[in-house]
Length: 588
Image 1 (tube, helix red, strand yellow):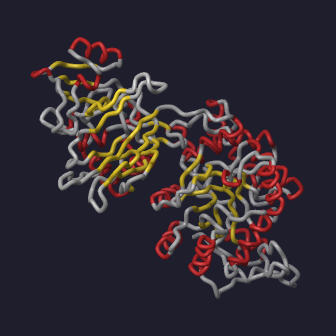
Image 2 (tube, rainbow, N blue to C red):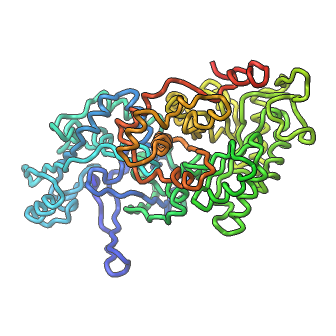
């Protein structure tokens, strides 16, 4: 590490493994810049656990800002792609001049003796050689230490590429009488410095997107050290100010059993704080005759996310499958994440609609309730027809959709918020809207949308929408993950549209010894979306979960991205006119 650390306790013999407790002696009035803990070393920890033992009430400063490092990669790919590619191709080396004795006046004053547990130059050289460092001895027994080549990005546990390094910390914080930031981190291939303009922009991006934890006594936070970088705001320790935040670092993951691998190891955290699996079972077009069995088998195979909707017409059967799994103790209700959706004809009757879905599913609450389409049609009572589908009166001589002009989307949203207040929905969200409409919802929402479900696959990648939602803290769910696969049998796509036969997808699948479908699904989770593929086949259900023991390279992700042609298969502006005699565009 960079800062001086004072040894408090050595715990040999009292715990299963050697433990060392230290204090960070970095000057409190100086900020600690964004960094990944020990990223400048060959074997950094995977997690950091923070616990606030004490913090003076009302005292300013000392918070711990966090930032998503996968979002940093997205930002650099958009604004500084040459810099990002150079980092990934060349790797980095860290350069630090360390004193012989700890210097508590400097934020990077840790001595070479402390860094390597050495008592003299000879023992330090032995440790540095063992760990792949190079060194030069300077005046006053200072030592210029150069790390081995290290990667600047890594694949995080969520499958996305993360900006994992100490570049920002070196650029903004590795400054004292012995060090200057321009020399603190260099490209590993030729020793050249980082471009200052790119780093300046990056620092501003992190500042704009940070989330600061204002410590209170008893606060406890676990940080994924690969996915998340952290920092520390300065604070004034005078006047009796007390701030004690304990941190523990750990390495490695406990390997879950195969049956719960996806549920245990692959999830996202919503803005509400709820944890949501990254892969789920989509229930659209699962036949009612087999739906209960498919849902049961999916949960048994490890699925913990079930994506349902009133309009799918199989929520009773979906509920039976869930009940069977719960009754057999395969999982608890709390381990499941169940989604349903408000149909078009219930925009003015939200409470009635959610209670009907809950009754059919046999549940007391939904983990997420989404507005299915930004289309309000005239109310059809449940006793008249359920699910009501698209037509107002199918028996009419000229059956059509009939719109309800008396209810606006914001009115419907306020009724959705009431379901959260009542405890009937833990999260609410939207489906099938774009950046403009999502921006409007975010402006007036009291309960912010936690989820946005849209059609998203390589033919319709929607890069801007995905980025916008991520920057606003809205998790994107992608449906139709295999593009045309679900639409051929209903006449909305041709067999020749299949991405499963696309040359690039097949080539990447061959490289990884995976199926083309797994490559498409891996692309979805690796870009940070929750995916909900549908299958009634047990083997394919299991294949659809087997996405987290491999990753696509940056080049492969870019190759799949390049397939994008802005092509939708599920577009009411197209199918409604032919099927329901009503022109109903929702996209430009």
